[in-house]
Image 1: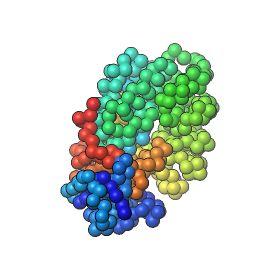
Image 2: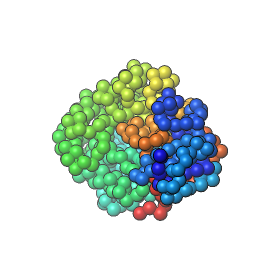
Image 3: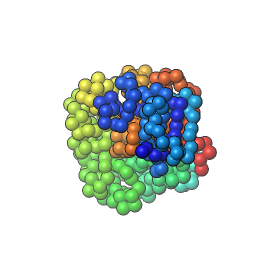
Image 4: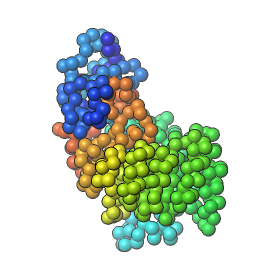
Amino acid sequence: MVRWDSLWVNVSVATMVDARSQSGAGLSGVESDGYGTIRDGAIAVAHGGKIAWIGPRADLPAGGERATRAVYDGGGAWVTPGLIDCHTHLVFGGDRAAEFELRLKGVSYEDIARQGGGIRSTVTATRAAGDEALYAVAAERLKRLMEEGVTTVEIKSGYGLDTETEIKMLRVARRLGRALPVDVVTTFLGAHALPPEYTGRQDAYVDLVCNEMIPRIAAEKLADAADAFCEKIAFTPAETERVFAAAERAGIPVKLHADQLSDLGGAALAAKHRALSADHLEYTSEAGVAAMARAGTVAVLLPGAFFVLRETKLPPIDALRRHDVPMAIASDCNPGSSPALSLLLMLNLACSLFRLTPAEALAGVTRNAARALGLADRGTLEVGKRADLALWRVGRPAELAYWLGGNPCAGVVRAGTRVEARQAA
């Protein structure tokens, strides 16, 4: 007998289970429409917050109701997996609105960075901010994402560029995950930019990242992954490999900001190290895409940065499809290139700018985003997965990528428990 603690009925369900996996996912009555739709569905949640049964309401097993503590009527809403924002820089001090104005006047992102702006300006503000100030502003940003159905978010460091501030950022990110009803995955990004005090001594800074920062962060269990920015204005492939080697010695998985402004072979480098993901990818070659496919590395597309920087070089979407590389979508929330607090807006931009289908975009913030974070227990709605749910007042799932503005999220459930983003601590 299937037994459960709570039951959701009168809902249409977008399971987001890949059509090739539906037969082994414990699902019935599923449409092969890209969303894995179940009409007039029911979702039973067991003690511990995992899905015990899912399918058409008419097929609900008899007898399970006797163990039910709560029955929720979804009122005809659509239910998707809780959304996952798998690439953010939510913890930072200050803003870069002045640089936004400069870019509108024709100054390039690279020129601003070379003149001491860009990431370095945020480093100054973040170093000066105390823990409480960083927590307060990051919590407000995070709540905005949560209001749109986000139940898991990745947060990177990378605006400290010294050991103590990088640790401060990661501790704040961990605190957000304890204080708010959302799962926070942390990523160490010490190799984000060269701090001003290391001008002309880039090799020495990489030594600091590898020999001091990573061992301390690993010892304190502050990072779930390590990242680097491999680019002409940041770190070379050889320097990136040093960072990856240090992370691997510490038992920390890796991911990479790759091929955003030029093709330095970042995607292939990420694949060589079995990276969880390679992110941006505007200039990635087909050879890099093929390497990612062989390694199982997820492509994380960041349409917010593409839009704000007014880029014209599109990521290789057709090649990613040909090689069957999973495509995730993320907000890249950061003060410089993507001051974005709406993952739903990223769905629209992914469709409008990158020509993804709405089903591909929704997969990008559910099952593929989970894979980009190495999380196998969420991202789809199927038996045994976490009951992370987002309820939507829409007529069809494509509306989530269709509307510009507005928030159709009617409720959020995390591990089987309803949550309210604005009322969180």
